[in-house]
Length: 259
View 1 (cartoon, rainbow, N blue to C red):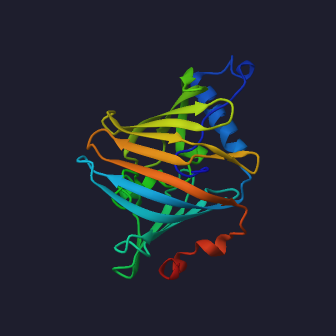
View 2 (spheres, rainbow, N blue to C red):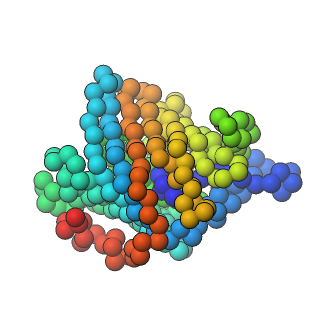
């Protein structure tokens, strides 16, 4: 989100892109959207994660999220599981980067140890959800190449449709297609294609709210896996911005004692 889960790709006035290639146009849209979302400083939020298997059976988890904007590098994020009891105390820490592999650590209280997530395993599922580890970092511009495909309506909004291709190693995706609202830089939908270029997952965003008279965040994010029939719903609440978080709050050695 933010520059977190799944990035923003959107607006550029038509008169600026007439002489641009589709690739240049797509990159410029991504840069404009990234610049628009810069300056939130930090935020905290609560999340309910609902996992649903192909039979419709559900399990629910309660999570707290902390996010810190970092100048000159990718953002930092921490997720702390509070419920249910079997995952209580589990914590995930992510330092996002550009083309360099993101640094990610997972604290597992049952083992009482911090596990570093290998860059080769970033396509694996996060805590049994349909979100991969690589989906959790901020979507830095350098991570992808871009191509503007077309413009089309997306519900009540008008959207650019952008193809982005991962440029970092060991991605589980061959490409992603992103629908982005032209007016307010809101991602509406992202399609993820596997390494064989088959549609793997679709992530849809809904219930956007505006914070600090500028920054838009969704109330819900729904990830559907078309190949295994599973899905994950993230319901966000209690957003608070500019809370005073600093890099000291995102230390690996804090994972074991986080509450």
